[in-house]
Structures are given as C-alpha cells and as structure tokens.
Length: 88
Image 1 (cartoon, rainbow, N blue to C red):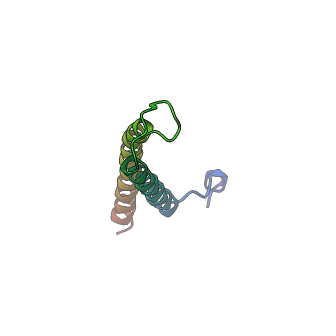
Image 2: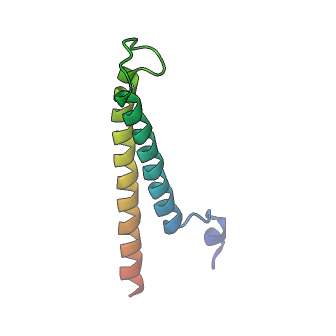
C-alpha cells in the first residue's frame, strides 16, 4: 500500500451499488405515495401541497431520479466487471 491509497476514501464499488439500489427503492416508495394521492378524490387547487397536479409533476421527477440511479448502478457494475477483467 502506498501513501495515496491510504489517503483515498474507503468508498467501494459495493457502496456505489448499494447507494444506487437504495435510491431506486426510495423513489419507488415516493411513486407509490404519489399514485395513491392521484387516485384519491380530485383536488382542483394546483398549488396545494397535496394536489393531484403536484403529484403528477413529482412523478416526472421520480422517473428522472430512478433513471439517474439506474445509470449509477450500471456504471458500478461496469467498474466491477473491469476490476474482475483486470484481476483475471
């Protein structure tokens, strides 16, 4: 082990994958909550914190967050594959 190795944070590939999976799980929970909110009786006030419109817009944010976490998970898996290729 050299000096630069000890100065690096101990963030491993499994940490990145775990973080990405956790992010996906959290977003899916948000989506479930939003779907339930949209399914409830219609609220016509678009600016109310519990409005259907806000929930529908938030669903688009959730989709983007899930995609970002999926890309992180994919990059983590590719990095792991590269490490395996190097060690083999």
